Length: 131
Image 1 (cartoon, rainbow, N blue to C red):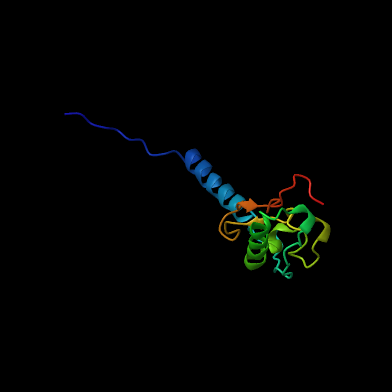
Image 2 (spheres, rainbow, N blue to C red):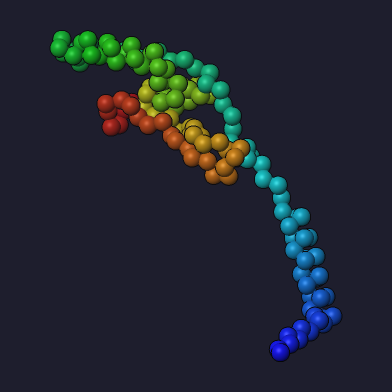
């Protein structure tokens, strides 16, 4: 027959364990609470933009219908509200209409995720350097 002898923990180990738990509980209670909206500003799109007008001199007769349809789609979908810098805050940059925005839009919930995904609306004009 085999016997297993178990020693009771000494007083020093108990004190160290209790002190460790106390330090851990104090450290956890001093952590600041996270405010998910601290780094973000809520903006309401305040500007509805018309599509930029196209100079007829630059459009061939063959492309005229496609250009007019594109202008219609830009106005219908409200592309200028996101793709024009300053449109979110009500001060659109008219010289760079549809040339992209420096205002990021969170596409995941900043209330749930500490680092949400952010997209910056790109330039949707046919020009690499619009303006």
